[in-house]
Image (cartoon, rainbow, N blue to C red; front, side, top):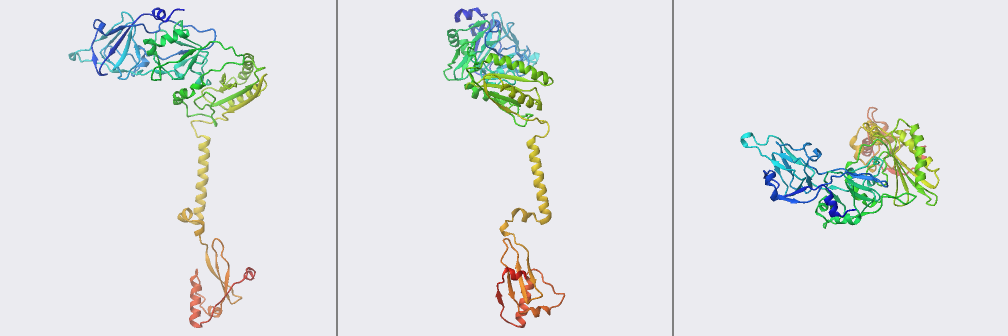
Length: 505
């Protein structure tokens, strides 16, 4: 194993151009012959190939900050000799230039930036004369102006990562091997918490812990692996690429869940096709599918035998549901339980729920499994149509409208319906004359029903002499009758309370 100094020498020696400008709008016209005053010699770039490891899982860093990668430019193409090349003012990443050099019309540098060149590469900035029309191309900006995040799951690649894999397990786990693309440069922000990985490789060079610590203190290490702390103290610990626990090993990244979800939750799909989306442990987004939490007896449970037996049973399930895509991820959690995540293809279907129910019965029968809890998404619905919640809300609103329409039909008064309280609603008031007795009874029906009262009315004879065409409306006829009687023959009116039975008689 070579030292860090020897490692740097083993990598392809290139030149690093470090240019400082007082403003991002400063334009320079230089050729290869004009560059020596602005160059600092250093080793950089990773150009050697890598290979997989016999133990553990290999996760590869995919982004880069290379000049010749079209994805790093806002125009989705590399600047040409007629374009104005702009590195934004806040660009702080080291940019690797192609071995053939670059030829641009104009070059705008950041306040403090780095361009990394290979030996014999050159930069040609040939501003066209104003008579020739100047730069006839377009302004192309470098958009990878800040370091990318270690905790972003989209920055890591592995064939075993699927949509069923929890986000926190898509970044390097404590037994994984971290590798970087040969020939590319990178700039990574590492969270200010301890990071445990199995091993780290630059090309085919594998670091020991001492070599990694020494590399992080170099100028190149400081640019490529940055810490979110103020003192830029990156804490990466190399563990082992093998798992010696027969019950399985956890990923060991659960303490990074908050950092991971802060980035990954921005890409969650909010248009899901299931009634009850679930969120497996370690996932940052709700998904359609199911997950299982398995408790086991460590005295008899063996993860290798469990995986072999489970895979055989899953082959039977896949043959039964051969028209449906079944994606499964298994992992061990920090609390000693195992988790199995089940999802379908791009579209959630009811059969996934049926498969989950079948899996639960199978998992419960395995040796060493003491308990199985299932969390499923239920039935599916058309995400392009109405959801069940929308259907329920619409039905409720229709019922309310129908009820209000019926009430208005009978009351014909919206104001009374909406704003009148029960205590202010007064029932009809009428006067009842009993022909067989000499009594006139006044009944007032209110809410609540008032006590019934009656009067011994000696003026009943006077009432009989009234014209047949005269009618009594509301309460005013009673007043009129009383007035007329009092004018003709004043007498006392005796108020007598009658019992309810007498009133009925």
